[in-house]
Length: 51
Image (cartoon, rainbow, N blue to C red; front, side, top):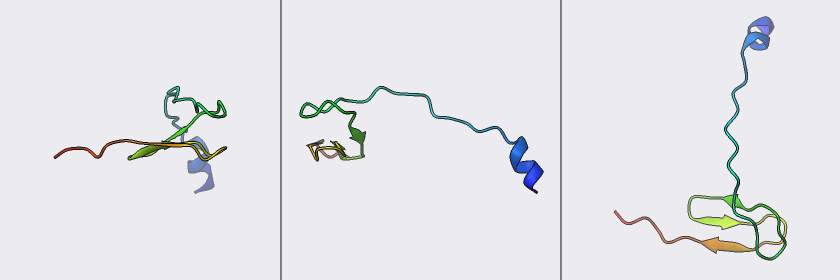
């Protein structure tokens, strides 16, 4: 069983350059309803998707 896990190749998500924080310059996390900075706490909220 351990040998099977070693043979599996890891897949990585392609890199997407994200939005930069206007306050501190670090990269912001993308959530479903907002972009937020984990370093300084800055957040930008998006409008909810219309149905």
